[in-house]
Image 1: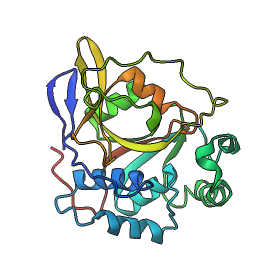
Image 2: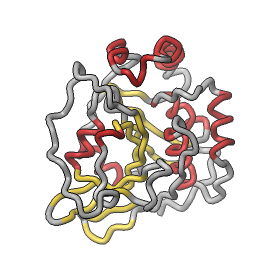
Image 3: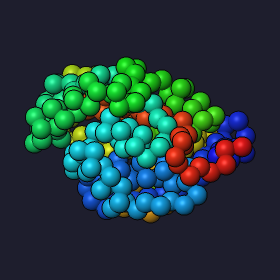
Length: 247
């Protein structure tokens, strides 16, 4: 389905919002948004999709490659870009990962090693923001892993000026405030001469449908230590999926 486009600098894909119901299922809620975007029937609810994930070995600690496997299992074509092919042991520096790291590392590393046989497309890449925007405009939505403590939405902070954008964090700069969170990028626009990203946030605390963040702020959240700049490009619905018209 093509995006609505009022001008070359105003793009929005009409992706239905799905809210998470637990503190761990933002990734599965984001995957369900994508499935419903490409499906006429929307035949699965969040609990049913969690059951599919559980059957694939997913736990309440969801990693990006597991979302790729879940989307592929549900006939959604996708490509996963990350700066780390496997599990970065330095993530142990991040408080967010410490409680379950050993168990997660075995499960996730196994998926990376089997990605070819599982039909998962995984590429080592620090995805440029321009590639993300071009994909949203011409192909489909994008799932992005961000540090939610760094996110800043203009609509959520009505009347407040955005804080200055700090230097992008490096792989050696963990933060005790880090909270991994998945969002769905659905478009972009220009506001007062500045480019903003449009995304859907599955957090139940967000009341409006589409969030809007200055590109620099979003990039800061996307490059925070702990995200591995994980980006899942959605290419459409594959064979076996009830597909919306893409004309």
